[in-house]
Length: 132
Image (tube, rainbow, N blue to C red):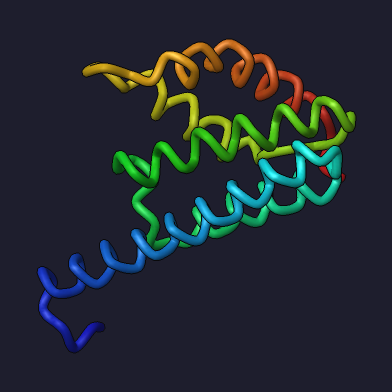
């Protein structure tokens, strides 16, 4: 039981979620830099670490900032992992990223929405593979 009133707890969780987004975005920027330098294994590790931050229970993955970070990191992890023939994002990350991208209705980013088919294919492939 919490000692704080429910509205205050929601505010605290929202703040924690935004901090998580900042950390995840930082990991994404660094992962893109490593990818550009050809350091794919390190870039994939950073992308996965950013996704791990977004799996914290207080992160509101359906919110715009969180969802955009989730979708971007999932796409990055899957692009790199396909080049390395390694596993990328988790099945849950893939499912949540796809759901977020599909629910965008007002002015969706075209480059992200174009990745829905890619992510669906990767999810189907990863769900058929045994856990490592």
